[in-house]
Length: 448
Image (cartoon, rainbow, N blue to C red):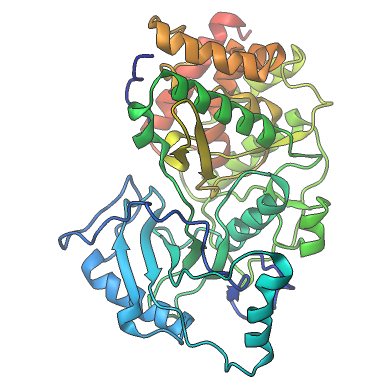
């Protein structure tokens, strides 16, 4: 199979406290599942890495000292020599730093209950006592301080119970800046694997098709998560709610990057059950109102055409009233997948990363095809035999009904509108995008 073209471009486990913005999620066990051959990038020369967008943070070489101090504050049983800091490739919304604690902290006295339990546990379980003294973490430092970290942590906790695929596990986070870093941060458990975007070109044909099948099944499993109400997983949900999938959701904030107004990020409103049409039209209304209040261009004509397009989609049953809202990753691309080669013919997806934009959204978003695995275009049939085989493999896994919706021209155009509906018009490029989408839609269904 020919190689693909480059890929296209707060919640706690226990009850939440009311006052403190820093939460310990749970005690982390020794990280035995982390493979010993996982490549960890060495520190690089002093430089500023801006990542793929967003605001600049201070240079890595000065920040690394603050990261080390933060680790010593969080893990006081370790000394400075035990903490190793590694620069990693930054994401679009976060600086990413790798952390390794290299020495096991002093154990309890041999006569203590904890030590006795550790001695007899292998006899009771039949498993050898852990001998690894290394613990590994990933530290995420948001570029934009208005990111609502409480919602991100709540979402990851929910997915940990619900999804059935590996997602980052939060060890501790602080949504404020009163810490050694001077920034909000989230410390996550290290997950094995390497970025799928790096691994894909090295795979043979059988391994590539194995990866296509694995990713297709992940898409189906994410789609199975449903709710009658749209929006973000609410920070008001308890651990019981998350475990038993009886969660509440909150409306999408307008603007999308609205800063958290409470120390615990608790919203005063919850989403109500509604139809997809009403939800989308309400987003249009709120975006227009915000633009006027913020003295931004109202773009009334474009919003009017978007509304007309949504009404036609509803009238033609592309967005029927009966559909629930499906969970939507919001940034599902190969850079946010970790994978490992397990054999000459199989690949395992070891983690799904970057759930910052995840929420319950209209059903048509959950049937988006992972076209980055063949040619980057949902409606273009690849000419290369290997890429065509990847596309056919995806279609065989998801089935005819899913494929039909994935390649529906009207819904492909609706998916292109989604970023505008949740963020509004932020620049001239957004205006050009909507004009192009509306023109393409009018070729299918003239707006009179």
